[in-house]
Length: 352
Image (cartoon, rainbow, N blue to C red; front, side):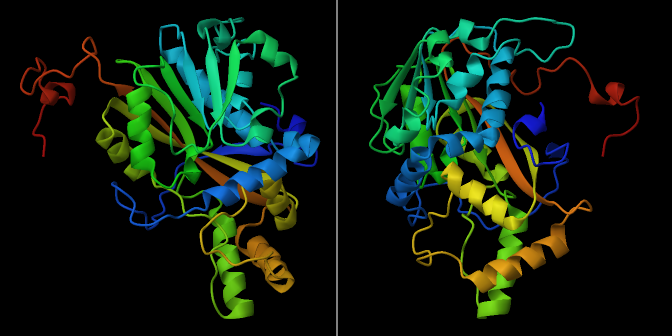
């Protein structure tokens, strides 16, 4: 990709990947939630306000567009066509736009390839924010794919019947869901047998630089800590949640995208313009105090700043694929049916 086209002030490379480094956060165990973490109405209002400023909202779509492209590329590994696909939490239809991109296959031996939209007969983009969902309804990509928009009362309650969709996709929306086990079970219900659910969501280490610097700034200036960055699911929990919801043949992996910003103020302005502001229940009302913001700027630079004067912001993506069980689905071989001894693979000797 070309970072300069996303943010002209970011030095190259503005967006880069980083090797997975494990950090542990306290997360809720799989199962029904014991409390509501996010204020869904506040999140709806944030998205509506963000989408009202159309040009600014489009400028900060660089992250959602990039993740949607990486997610849809995984459809290349599935050798089938899809009659009806659901894009759950569609935002501004970033997935539909990614499906229409030319030459999606990254294989260098293939100089040209058809857009992935050629394998999708119909896609339903569903989101609770009407302004966000219809923001780009007049853009040319709408003519390149059979796209229907549907406004939901809430992404946590799916109004679709069972066995409706040939695939369900979701990009950068599920991290605001309170009851993930219930939503995953509903997704499994609306899928036809032997069809995939594919999603990307912010996870564990996302914005750990901002989280730690704001905590230290709060402690220094106010003598206490207030939650400014939302809690996120850990990659180790997602496999269990998918399995509990009834999905089979699971794949869960992580990918870090690091965006360089000129300062912490630009970072937080972009988060707000994306509609990704803080929506924790019981959060402190009003904006962050000026003295805390100034302290945060200095602490962030001291702990995490780049040599060129910019600051990095890490966005950890959790990608997941799960398949609804079907009668003709591939099954693992029974235990003890293997024909090759692992000691032969390892060159002999004992396996301890």
